[in-house]
Length: 308
Image 1 (cartoon, rainbow, N blue to C red):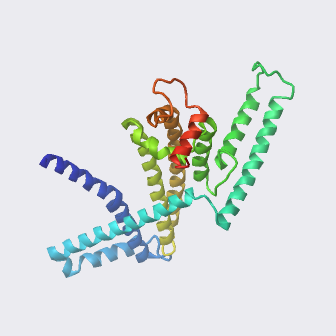
Image 2: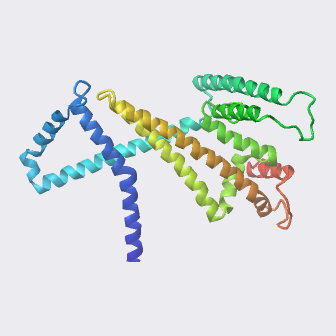
Image 3: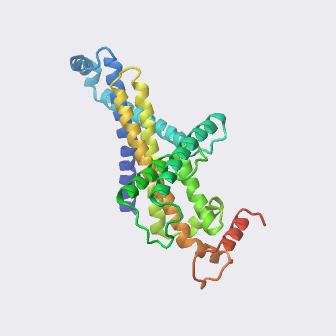
């Protein structure tokens, strides 16, 4: 038992250091440098060395208790900054996934829908040029390589806006909505009602993969929160602005990758274990083969919504 507690304590300490202390300490260091140098002396290393020498020369720092108290204060301040970043990250996640019922969100959704429609129109025109009307429908038609490459490029450009016609202000919300729409179209089931029950029966490997993607999305949101913090520091020390831009760009890429993987895993979980859940609630026989049929999926949605 002592060995187990020691192992858990070590893991918790490592996680605390990685998630709270190190990012917070780095942020505090940049804040201290920026507040000392400012815009006018942004690259004056001599000014920074002078400040460090003055701090080290203070008699109070020669006392062990004072130094220990100072270290503890720095650690607590770093942890507090990191906790603030985590709180902001939660708000950023909700912002990314919000449904968009307020006027600003509706305007953003409309703007994204116009962009998506323009790119979808260009894609349809490229497909029509590559596959003329009246062409053979037996799959024997060969599309030129150049036309196929253009179709792929236009498809990727359209999907960068949204995987389908946008209904939410951000790509992230549209990606999860697309997964829900695909599940409903294939199986007639409401993913929001199905998912909490399906989660209870998923095997451990599936749970780990889904949780890993979810954690990666949360980590990207935390990085975006730090980008906001460094952007605020840029008001006093402009070199923090490039750091904020890099953090924001990396956060955006990681968030898209993580949420895309999460949406794919959620769909895969329904594909593989949807019929098993139907059997668990008594709607199908455990021996029935084949995918979940839409009629059963619709009945599952009614039961899970408590709609009778």
